[in-house]
Image (cartoon, rainbow, N blue to C red):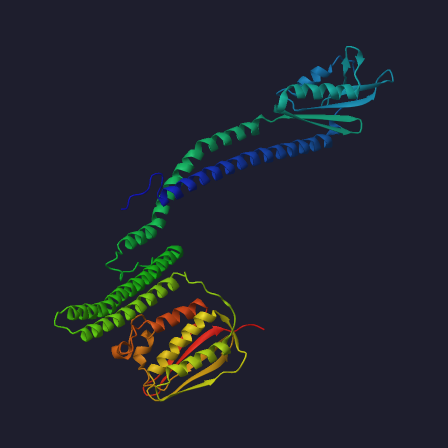
Length: 473
């Protein structure tokens, strides 16, 4: 187990904490919605129930006696008290002409004579009765709902208490407050187990990744089945380890090859110096020894310069001028230089170069690549032709450099552009090469978004092609 930084938490802890907060918020919001919805539906149903009751009362108005009988002193306050009493939820009044011919309001009850409603100032009016009853109900607060329906001369006053369903809402809210922590606690425990099972493949990938050390880069992380995201992480880690393994292998091979290549000239230099320091050597012999030392030093300096060039190119530190260039002019220039290189050999330089072929790239890098390919072609062509030709393909243009040499066996072609790789050590060492020329050519071509390809067979010579993006019109 690796040490974690201060303040950092495990992924499972973070996920559980976030899900717990989400669960609390969701359950609380759900409980609030349920309580509010229940209260709203109860209020609507309560209003509909009162409306249905009023409909029934309205249909039974024929049971109530017409005004008549003895005069009474029924007051509106008494009427409101009866409306809000335990035994009755409604009262009915009727406005009609009294015995004196004046409008009067009567309180009606089933199968009983009507009773006129009066106030201290005399006979009450219908508006005054309605106002008194509404005020009396309002004074009771939100606990009562009042419904007033006017049907011709009749006024139906219906009042019902909200307390039954209010108590139900209160009970539901209390149950939610009690059950919410319980539900959240249960959810947290379930989430903790689920997250632990979900994170376990990721933890296994972490452990297997930690087990991959620099001395054993061949190991790979197993891909967990059924978890796509973790499988993607495992595949990504394996690809990264594979690249690191290849880079480590290339670095080891480069270190071994560079050490070998540098040891050879240094050993030669040391031997020449020791030989020249012998007092028995004549001045002429000492000069020859120093000349050999100078030659080895020049070869070593060139190899170190090539290595520095490769390192700068791979680190993208070489400035590249990607611009339109006249590829035909560059090939003509390289062909002329090739003729000078082959002046002392029975080699003929030929070219098939149409004028005005344009490409996109760095003119200096392209010239260096072609000079490298041409130099190799001349060295490995004892007798015959070295030819240059420009070819076109979709979106790119190429320069082919063909020689008439001994050719290259197929098993050597995949490694031909590796550093220090030689098909035969004598092919390069006798000419002062270190096996870096083709590696440099490939690197410079890729910096220009191009490539270098090779086609060869034993006894048929070799063809190297530099491909560059074609310039648009």
